[in-house]
Image (cartoon, rainbow, N blue to C red; front, side, top):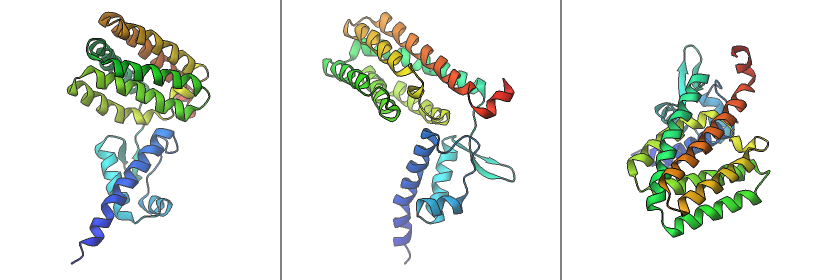
Length: 225
């Protein structure tokens, strides 16, 4: 019975999926880049079967598309899709902040403050700032105590991977984000729901503007401006 082979392929498929996700997030795999099974299998040091499985999962996530006569490629978002993503992010994050002002525990508020302090210490380290910022916003959603809101945000975050490197890498943006987080924390600690929602909206609008500045600098976008 040839069952052991398939079982051994399953973890390789998950590993391939996570590694490709990481490359899309970092920008190592850019929108429009082709995903060739043979090349990826050789680079990842695994067989083509788990690579094929990973590509199918990425396609189901909406991160990969099949291009006629070219095969699988990383999906490319247009300018309007980027704007729409952030419009929805503003809605979800602002609601999460409003709910967190009501339901966050003192431990969660302390955790957010500690993460923001860590962001100050990590200035200049884009990768670390990305991870810390992700943690900060995750705590807010956890504190909101709304599973449907969290589910919606997770779905949105998958598509946002296509945006590439974090805006934390933009000069001055990390310092701005830390200041915006501080204003949000004041509202959360004061249990002021309206102020927390407004602070998060301000934070997300600033993030959106930073993302659009980054987007305009993409070489293949310049001809379309």
